[in-house]
Image 1 (cartoon, rainbow over the protein chains, first blue to last red):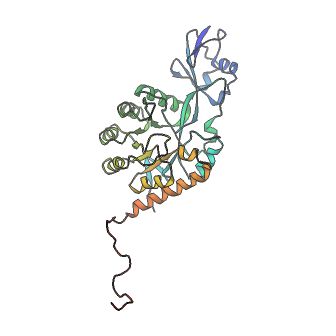
Image 2 (cartoon, one colour; image 1 turned 90 degrees about the vertical axis):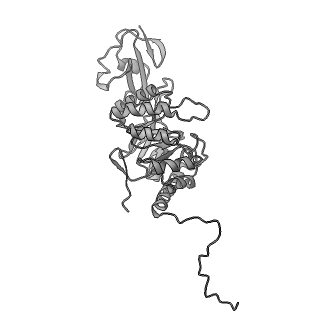
Image 3 (cartoon, rainbow over the protein chains, first blue to last red; image 1 turned 180 degrees about the vertical axis):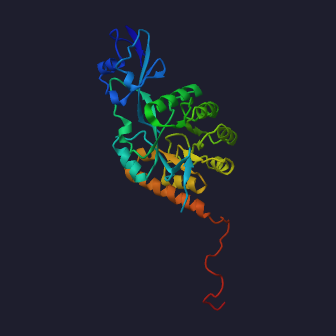
Length: 66
Length: 257
C-alpha cells in the first residue's frame, strides 16, 4: 500500500505498524517522534496501530537548534 | 545577592541561555552548558533523514536544564503552533521559543505571525517566549497576549555583529514589564555584557559559542560577561560626561604656584 512518509510517497507492506515501518527504515525507536495524519502517536501504540493506505506519517526528532 | 529571574513561575539562576545548533559534536554541548552554568537551552525539531540517522539530542542535555524547543522552520503562525504542540508531545515540557521567519536573507522574525502564535499557545498553557524584532507596539501586544518574556534580536541570526538594535532594546527594557532577553546576533562576551548593562534580563547565545575555536572556553567567557553585565546594571553606572572631571582632589598640590 502507498503511504506518505516525511512528505515522500512510498510503498510499504499492508498491515504495517509504526514499529514495523520504523524498523524497516533502521530507525532507533527511542529517538524519534511520530505523527500520523498530523496527530502525535504515543510510543505504546506504535506496535498495535496499523497504517492504512493514504496515511501521512511524519517521523521527527529533536536536534540542536538556537 | 537575591537576584532571581522568574519566567513562567520558574526561578532561573543563570541569565545566559544557550542555543544548541551548529556544534561540531553533540558531546560538546554538556561541557558548554556546564562551563556557561546555563539552565535554559534551546533545541529544534526536524524531520528524520532516513539515510542519515542522527543521535538523540536529549541524551546530551543535563537533567536539570529547561529545554526550550524553538519553532524554527515555521513560516507562519499555524506552522509555529504545530511545531510547539509536537515538541510538547515529545516530552519537551511547556516552554517554547516562537520563531516565525519567512525572510530568508536576514532571517528577520515576522512579528505579526509571531503574535498570532503567542496568543494561541498561551491559551494552550505554554510558557511562550517570542523571538521578535524590537518594536515597542509589537512587544506590548505580545505582553498583553500573555508572553512570558520578549526576545528581541541584537542583530540577524548567526551574524555575530553585536547589539545593533541597542536603542530599540533599551526602549523595550524601559517600557515592557516582562523580562527582555536579547536573542541572536551577539558575537562576543563584551556584547552580551553590554546588553545586560542596559537592563536585559538575559541573553540567548548560540553561534558565537558554537563556532568559536574553543566553544567551552567561550561559553565560560559569555557566562562571566553576562554575570558582570548584570551586576553592573544592578550597581547603577555613574553618569557619562563630555569633559573631564578629576578623580583626585584639585587642592593641596605639592607645588608653589
